[in-house]
Every structure is written in structure tokens, then in C-alpha cells.
Length: 358
Image (tube, rainbow, N blue to C red; front, side):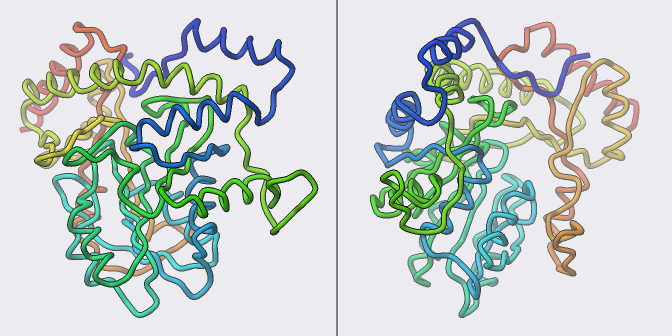
């Protein structure tokens, strides 16, 4: 079976962990500081603050910017639940807007229509590694006096019109979960151009203190360990090569798949292909996935249930494009370790299933 995802962990990562273990400094320390500095190079030199997960990055960025009860934040419903959870955990209300079908990202027109007097921010998700429409979204935010938070959990090293993802908004949040384009084992990063917001995140992640025992606010324990940061630093050195490999794999799939809707890339966008997501429009998507598995090709559905319909939110909303995407999307393997033979197997399997069902 060709797996849907395959984390890349090598001898260099193991050596980095061993180096930290031998140092005796296991918690947040010099490795975290170095990882933050090195990651800043990916986001135009913005401040970078490492935390223990992508969800914590989202949550702390909102808290540091003062988002809370009575506020509304516009988000897509077609995303992982953490997108909306992070808003709700502050006491604010996530307001769900529809998406554009080509990129699966927030539709600026739907965002504009969702703005109310209580709206404080917009949070686009750069889903599957494709940048959201930051030009129109930023213009809308500026016109209405709103903050912009990027959910860049799936889009490390992506860019739009020469600007890297993570360098557009008030703040951005990245994830280093094992299946992401790079991993630290588990972890996240907040990036921002605002030094005050960066300091607030640092304080919040460390029990509300910058100096030991001088607690300024009620905070959290969401620090990244030096063990995780050491892994992340090694992965960062490999990211460019892995990204190029993902892009080459996606190009091969785009050129050779038949009978399904392949994912386009918007003009000016650099797609990093966290997921290679087709749309199955002429067949039952779930049956299609089962038939691929019978041909030794695993796939994934991200995401079968829009957030607004999850039991944790359960809202009656009219988001037709979101519903269409949730019923049609299917993500195929695209990770860097795929061999030429495996790529050909994926193409043969998809084309055979599409043809058999037509």
C-alpha cells in the first residue's frame, strides 16, 4: 500500500535529539531560540515565537491581539476544527464564510457579506498549501478596520506574488505536526511584525511571565521543548528540497490524471502541496477511495464534515461551495519520498477507477 502521507525522519534528526539529550537542557532553551531565528527567514524577517502545537499558535495569537468575548472572527468552515476552536477558546465567535472551489480557500465576497459591527478579524486558511486570496482579503480588512490572522498550518514556504505566507497579516500560525511539510515531532509557530504582539505570545506561552516568578498575566504552559526545536531545525534545512519534490510530484499528477478534477494553482501563487486534492465529480467519492485502496493506493478526505456541521458547533448555514467540496475532495499521496514507480501506480489506479465508473 502506498500510504497517504509519510513523515521524513532521518539520521540527522535523531542525532539532533541525541545532542539535546546529552546537553541536559531539554525544555525551552537555546535550540528553541535558534529555531525561531531561523524560521524568521521564511517569513520576511518577522518575529517568530515557537509553541507546542499549531492550535496553541492560533489560540495565543488571538489572545495576544486582544480577541475575546463579544468579538467575531470570520473563518472558513472547510478546514480542520482547530481553525474555529482557537477562536471559540478565546470566548469570541467564529463566523463561517464560504470558499472558492478552485483553491478551497475563503471567498472574499463571502467574507465581505459576513461582516457585522462585531467583526474584529478575518482568518483565512491557506488550505492544502495553496495561499488564500490575500490581496482582496487584506483590502477588505483595511477598509473595515479589521485584523488579519493567517492560518498557515499547511502552507510553510508558500507565497503569493512574492510575499511569503505568514508575512501578510497581523499574525500567522504554523503547525509542525508529523504529517506537515516539515515537522518538529509536534509544535507550532506564531509569526508577526508587531514586537508587542510577539512579546505577548512569549509571555502567554510561559505561565504569563517573561522573567521567572514575575507573572504578568494568567498564562499557559505551551512552550516548545529543545528536543522538538532541534528536530525542527534539521527539517528546516531540508524543506526547500522537499517542497521542490512535492511540486514536481504534483505536476506529474496534474499532467497524467484523467477523469477527475485536478487542483489548479492561482496566478502568482507558489503552492507547496501539503495535500494534492482532486475533486471526484462523476463518481461516489467514498467508493472511489475504496477502489483506490483495493489497488494499493491510500487516500484521505480532508474534510468530510464542514466545521459548522460538527457537533461542537452545529449551525444551520447555507454554504453551498463548502458542502460541494466536502462531498467531492480526495487527497492523493504527494509526499517527497514517492518514487517514479509509485507515482505511476497512483496515476494508473486513479485513471482505471475513473474509467471503470464512467
